[in-house]
Length: 105
Image 1 (tube, rainbow, N blue to C red):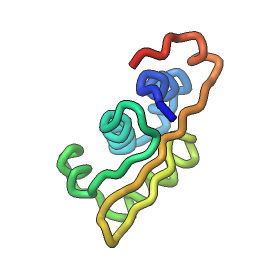
Image 2: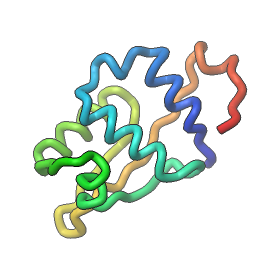
Image 3: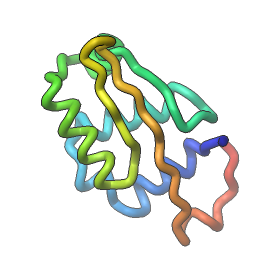
Image 4: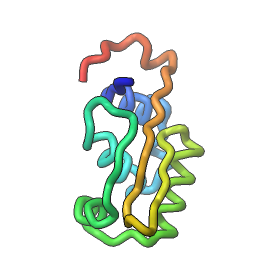
């Protein structure tokens, strides 16, 4: 199923979710939605995340971020210690504010 980056960003902004997130959570979310245009699922190596964010993330931080994303209906994230990567599934919900906008990415 295709997913719209524009709709994901619009949801983040129109629902003021970005105000409730820590800066590293916003940066990780932007990284996740920027790596693939159309798929709802993906993987990121921990070292690649740290390279893009510019600092190291502890496993506890990734687990907290995963919990926040789940609670905010942004994404489901699972961290694999063996593979040292996250697997994610983006959540795209359609709100009344986002229905009226074109879906071009």
